[in-house]
Amino acid sequence: MHSVYGIGGRGGFERMASGNSLTISSVSKSFNSEKVFDALSFEVVPGDRVQIVGPSGIGKTTLLNILASYDMPSSGQVSYGGVALTAMPTDQLADYRQRLGFVFQEPLIIGDLTGMENILLPFVPRSGAEVDGLKSGATKLADTLGVDTVVRHKANTMSTGEKKRIEMVRALVKNPEILILDEPTANLDEEAATIIIRTVKEQADLGRCVVFSVHRDEKLMSIANKSVRLLDYK
Ligand SMILES: Nc1ncnc2c1ncn2[C@@H]1O[C@H](COP(=O)(O)OP(=O)(O)O)[C@@H](O)[C@H]1O
Ligand SMILES: [Mg+2]
Image (cartoon, rainbow, N blue to C red; front, side, top):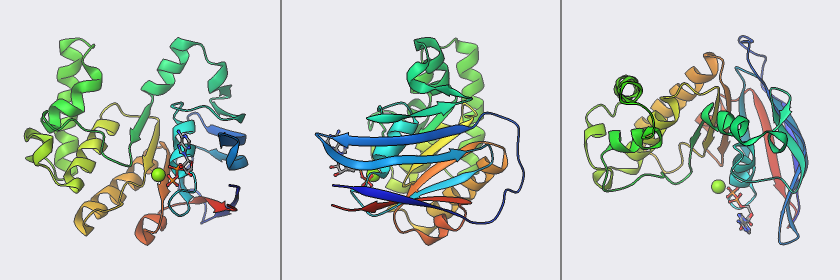
């Protein structure tokens, strides 16, 4: 399998916030010597809404996982603030992950826990006061995302669109500098998709580095200002 990519622009930046950029330099990835993508290079600056476009199986999730440091490139590097993720000592990499909000393609949510318990789960080791602050932030975000009631329900009673918005609250509650979303609107009803798209745009306007993958949602595509298209040469 072999993929190539193209980068196109869609208008300029509304504003350039100060902050760190994410730089992707000649990144390639293979699984069992099968190439998924080759020598990808692009930059995500604060305020950007970069879309990773392509059909199912092309490598979108693989690329987002590499940007998030959940997977390693086969060659090339991803840098944040000029430092390669692979060169970061453990504590700096932990800090990078702390600055990152990630929305998984399939909601990564525990069914027996409530929405709020799911949102706060990654922050369990923190002090009670800190968790209280996060809970108050999560309550406001849940309200904005239209899941203020749902957040008190067990996740196994929620629709996919509700779970996705709970996942979104969990990603946003720590005020991430980088927001990575893997097909955030796939299989959602129009109302849930509209809320998510509006929120994604707002996050970029706040100066976050935003990257999302998209297969065919034209409305989501319309908010991107940069595009990385993965092409299949299987
Ligand atoms: N851990 C893995 N081991 C082997 N192959 C993988 C692994 N993860 C993904 N792949 C393969 O890489 C390709 C791209 O997958 P993926 O990134 O999930 O695509 P997309 O998100 O665009 O649907 C697929 O052929 C998939 O089977
Ligand atoms: Mg995927």
